[in-house]
Image (cartoon, rainbow, N blue to C red):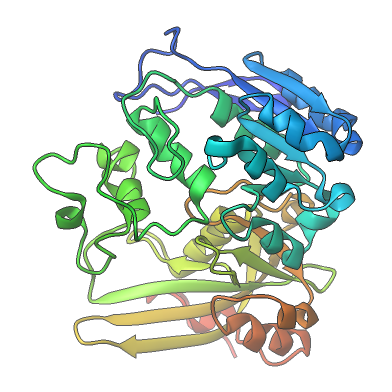
Amino acid sequence: MFSRTKTLGGRGKSTKKSVSRPDASSSSIGSGSVLLVGSSVVHAQELTTVLKALGNCKVSTCESAANVSKSVSNEQLDVVVFDADKDGDLSPTIRAAAGTRKDAVFVIAYAQNAASSAAERIKLCSGSAGANMVTFDPDHVFSAVKKIVSRFRDGEYTCPFCGAEGFTEDDLWEHVPLFHINSRSDSRGLCPIPCGNKSQFELAPSHRSRDNWQVHLRNEHGMPGRGEEPKEARAPTPVWPFALVIVRNRHGKFLLVQQFASRGYWVPGDRVNPTEDLQTAAIRIVKDQAGIDIELTGVLRVSYTPQSNFARLRVIYVGRPTHDGEAQSLKTIPDYVSVGAAWVDSGELDGLKTHGDEPSIWFPYVARGAYIAPLEIMTSESAPALKI
C-alpha cells in the first residue's frame, strides 16, 4: 500500500495512491503557510530546519508575541506555532484573530515544559480555542505540517467542524482526527460523503453510537471503507478481551495517555484484535497510543465481567520501556487513538482529569512495591505450565 523514499533526516515520504485522490502529479496538490510566533520559536534552529525542507510551505515569522493578532489577521494561515513556556497560551488570541477561519488553523504549542507536563498539555488543549497539538519534537512538527500543507485542494467535500473546503475523501479522513480529535462529534449533521444506499445511522452497529460522526468516518470511509484497513467497529463476540498496561520508567514515573474529546487521561488500554494474543496486544496498544516500545513484566489483575449477551475479559499488565523505548519521544501528534502521552508521578494525579480510576488505584500500588503476578499467570492454553 505504501512505498517510502528518504527525505530530510531519514523521514519517509509516502507515495501512497488512493482511489479517492487525484494522481500525485496533479497540479491540485496544495501549498500552505506557517507562522512562527515569538523569538524562541523563530530562532529555534531545529524547528526552522525541518520546515525549510517542505518546498510547498511558506514560513513567516512574528518576533514579538504581542503582535500575534496583527500577524494572524493579515494572512490566511494553515499553521501557527508558539512557545507556551515563554509566551503563555496564545491559542485563544490566535483563533480570535483568525476570525471565521479560527477552527481551520492548526495551532501548535511548541514548548519543552508544557509538552512534558500532563497538567499543562491538557490545559493547552482544552476548549474550542485550545491548541491542536503540544510538542517539543521538531520531527513531529514536520510530520503534522507536511500532512496539512500537502493535501489536495480541489476535492468535493467540506469539513463539518471547521468549514474548510476542497477535501478528497482520504484527505477529510485524515484531517478530522488531526484537527478535531478534541471536539465532540455526537451533535454533527449527516455525513458529507455519500454512503451508498444507507445513512450513517443505518451503517452504525448496535454497540456504537449511531450519531457519532467521527466513529462513522473512521470506519465507513477512507481505507477502512475500501477494505484496505480493518474497521474498528465490528459485531460483538461472545467475549471481548481488553488489555491495559501500567507503564513505569526508570525514573519512577508512570505513563498516561491523553484521551480524545477532552476526556482527560487514562492508562494505555484498548480492545484486543481477533488475531492477537493479549501480551502482543498490550505492547501494540502502548505503541499506538503513546509512541514508545515497552516490555511486559507482570500481571496486576484479570477480570471477567458477564453482560446480557457477551462478556468482557480485561487484563491489567505492568510494563517498562525497552532500552530503545527509554530514548523514544512520547507521542504528540493527535490521531484517532489518542491526543498524546505524558509521564507523571503518582502524586500528580490529584490535579489531573482522568477517564477512570485505574491510575489512582494502580500507580501507588506499583510504586510501593506491592505484589505483581508473573506474566505466565495469564497466557495461552498451549504455553508451558508455570514453574514453582
